[in-house]
Length: 102
Image (cartoon, rainbow, N blue to C red; front, top):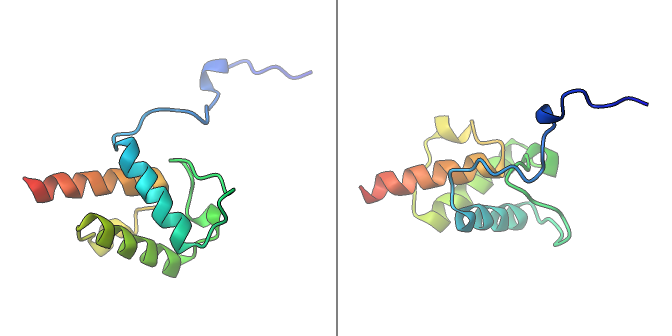
């Protein structure tokens, strides 16, 4: 019987290390679910990777466009290529929204 000798290194699904507000993360999840036509029972978390949800590069572009429209922001192409998870999208949105309001 194998035992985990490094319990502190175990990853938790409920890790809270996000900079983005829960409201932003939830809105991103809503847009991702809509763009990818995911059924309601599909589990979306901040760590959800777009590729794991079946998104290809065109889907990712459409997700970014949906986020831009929803939040009234403009995401540079360079930045959009670095977005692979719900959390990354939410963090970038908050950064851009703060920049826009400044």
